Image (cartoon, rainbow, N blue to C red; front, side, top):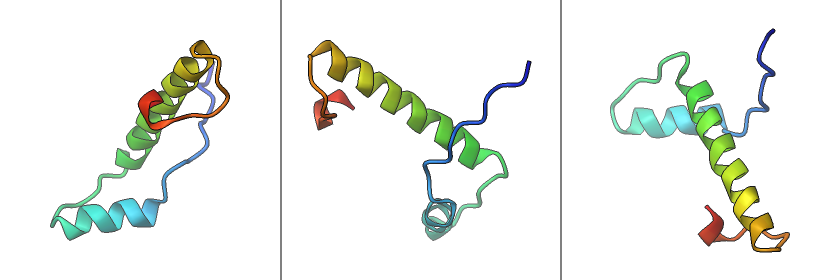
Length: 62
């Protein structure tokens, strides 16, 4: 069964620009991996926020 595609949350041109400004190159699968990390961070933040009976994500949840 195919894994569901996650919505892209990163702006590819900004990420690539940042990496290029550090004199590095971006691999074809780096943006997908970064997007997966961001989804994980946000999923964890939602869990913490709900555990604290809030509906607003705060910096400490991240």
